[in-house]
Amino acid sequence: MGNELSRKISNKKPTIKKSKPRRTTIPTSHHRNSSSSSIMYAHRNLTQSPQSSQIKCRHFLRFFDGQGWCKTCTINGWSSGLQDLDKLIKKTQRKATNWSDNYLEWIDFNQFGDIKEIGEGAYSVVYEAMWLNGRRRKRGKNDKGRRCSRTEPVKVVLKSIKNSKNMSSYYIKNLKNYYRYSALICPQRIQHYLEFYGVTQNPTSGEYLLVIQHATFGNLRQFIHSSPSTYASLKWSEKLWWLCDIASNLLVIHKSHYIHGNLHTGNILQLGLNERETYSTITDLGLCIPANSTSSIVTCEKSLNGNNLVYGVLPFIAPEALLGNPVSKYSDIYSFGIIMTEIATGKLPFGNIPHDEKLASEICYKGLRPQIPNLFAPKRFKNLVERCCHPDPLERPTAKQLKYILDYWYQCAVGNLRHDSRCMKITNEFLRADEQVRFLFQANEMFEQEEEMKDKTWFTSRLWTFKLNNDSSTKLVTSTEIVDNWEMQQSQKSEQKSQHITTEP
Image 1 (tube, rainbow, N blue to C red):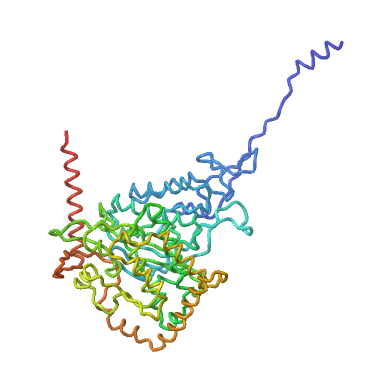
Image 2 (cartoon, rainbow, N blue to C red):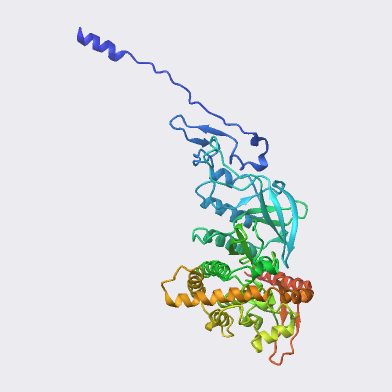
């Protein structure tokens, strides 16, 4: 009986009712616009796993991160029109681990409004604009649901690169260095850094534009020369703070085996919450070349009947570069020394001297340098400037030495090292200089002299070509024709190289 019952039970097949896995589609209003599919979600179709609460991308069967972001969907579905540029942007996206990481985006030009031109250089035009969709940000406590959060519309800088319709691979390589620098500064925790958000394209002109964080207080030159009264009210502790920031930035550049090559106060931007608490950050690393160039101008190669080519603002260019030698880390240190003089005096370097062949010759052969009046800065500060601007590059300090010295002086200036007798002496020197500067700037005579000479001086980066001789009979030319000729030569070199490759057996 028991065996018969057990046999009946074993022969009975239990029926299990199978339930179909539920698919949850999360619609958003953004799905109507495929061109901006990365704003709310990086995809259109979402499914939810029955085993967990994680949302999955239907296209690629990948789970999103905690902010509802799918890396693969972000990488696909767009193109800049330039293969090398696509590779650069997508490579930064592949390295990202979450939505709010510092990776580049391809941004539709329609996302920008209220565009205004604010400046122009030899190879770019700078605009400020409102980014209507805002930048990416971490998901906050008040954000509901799994969504990729963005800020409210935010002001940004659009840097339109001239001749970028034919952007060369070499320029994109420099753009990669520029991105790497901004990514390097962030983990170093060097106060504030200028974020590089991505790239867009003007559909009318076809030119590409870099989308960069807006600097609250402009560049350092604008900040210093905004008004005599503002500068006169600055204390040496604030000036040393700026120099510490710049030295820290420069140290990161040099430790990463990069050279800036065009360092001046116009390429140092001021960030911060208010005018009395600003941070300085270096920008434009590696971008001081034409977009269609195939090699670097700042190598000072021979061109145009044996003349030298060098790019920059003349007073900030190291003498060895003016003489045709390649720029180096030591050239950046020279430029840093000239920046120190501008911060110390509140005056443009050689602001009352025409920037011409005579000035270039005297910088190289007569050791002409901007001077700091004795009352404006302590002697130890002037001595450091002289070391930075030494005619022998090997006699100049390194970025690491500059950072160490300036950090120590800053700590002294703010009174953090009162137990140190040597530091107290330094503190008194800078306090005395503060009092003297405030007294001397009441007349504002020096600023009036600069206003008279501004039309004759060039404080915008440009391409220079010259052949300096020791007898001072120099010929210095700056014109768009020089740039055109240089670019033509680079194009011819590229064509010859291409022909040579195709004719090889």
